[in-house]
Length: 227
Image (cartoon, rainbow, N blue to C red):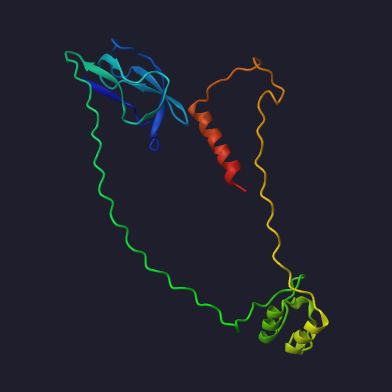
């Protein structure tokens, strides 16, 4: 007695649909006879018998989806051979005791910036760089002043301490606050066939084959994940 197994029709195939049987229990087949059709995400292919004998049992019904590779789908009795008992269910392997995860070393806490930390040099709206002394930048940050609104009197228009102090007395523009977060996009609404004006009974619902399911899954992933 020989079990006919679900074949792997490609290196990446893990399961398939047993689309159609070309034989039934009691039929005699020889090597090379087409016995079934297997449907994958990419194609529908014929399965041929590799041995000669009689089909004694059909173990997987026609149209079954998600049949794993190497699953027995039928049983073949060699000429002169006796029927063998049904295969025993595979024993469930005992789960190993969970190992204790290694303790992660605590990451060093980031060093807090001192009160004299200097803010980065800002840029003007037109892309030109602002030149300011480190002390002037710190004083402007503490006072909440926008350096772009302060006119520098130092060399080459550099903003110095006296410019910041004078701007604080003269009412310079405060630094711009963070912009409000954009509202989340509303989910797309899917209309039913009735809402689209398609009346009941004017169409036929056809089950998707493996290839169409794969195409639909890829299109959905592309529309969802690709910006």
